[in-house]
Amino acid sequence: MSSEPAQGPGATPARAGVAVAVADLTVRLDGALIVDSVDLDVAEGEWVTVIGPNGAGKSTALRAVAGLLPFQGSVHLHGHPLDRLHRRERAKAIAVVVQNPVVPVGMTVFDYILLGRTPYIPPLGRESATDLAAVDEELTALDLVPFAGRRLDTLSGGERQRVFLARALAQGARILLLDEPTSALDIGHQQEVLELVDHLRAERGLTVLATMHDLSTAGEYADRMVLLSGGRVVAAGTPTEVLTEANLAEHYRVKVRVIPGGHGPLVVAVRS
Image 1 (cartoon, rainbow, N blue to C red):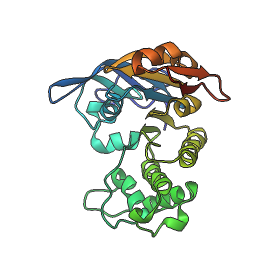
Image 2 (image 1 turned 90 degrees about the vertical axis):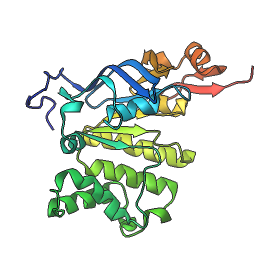
Image 3 (image 1 turned 120 degrees about the vertical axis):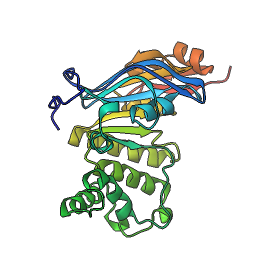
């Protein structure tokens, strides 16, 4: 996919190198203000992670960027307004891995990943050889070939997370949104999934926008971080700039020590 897509109706000139541009994003749910005037850019090939305490609006903001929630403000993907993209075109541009996705009962791994090809299959049509080849490619890339015929509900948490990622990648989108991708995994599977995402980002030129709870892990993988509190951006920059003892004490209301690590700051909670 070109970083400078042809301009169609309603498109704005793409800023060079910007994959996701969010301006004044505001979300209200049942009348409550959840996300308040958030501005955020993600460069092509960059990994940006949104952090914040519970209730800060992280997942809501991500779902709005994905087009899964109504919002005010603007979201552009490579210069194209999100709200003017047809659903199929949106799915070709941006793929989402949500927390606890709904999985049809009894569905196999192969058939679930094939759902990622829905934007390319005509209504009332059937999958093509290209679609089947795309599924085979992701099964191989994510080391899932032995599980292709297995039901999803028979897999471990780490295996299922790889399948969810495979479905998103099968869409062929270059922008990947991850909502708490490691929340249900043990530390070994957390590292396995994040290393895989980082490898695929480098190999395929993916852009990653994620939300995460584990601050040390988030800081090891993100190029930049955005700290939300009360639905607003209160800090943004490199992990070292955002993960400071002062920021975390103020917005998480916790006493921590921040220690330099090999790939980013390590955050350790300490007793008062």
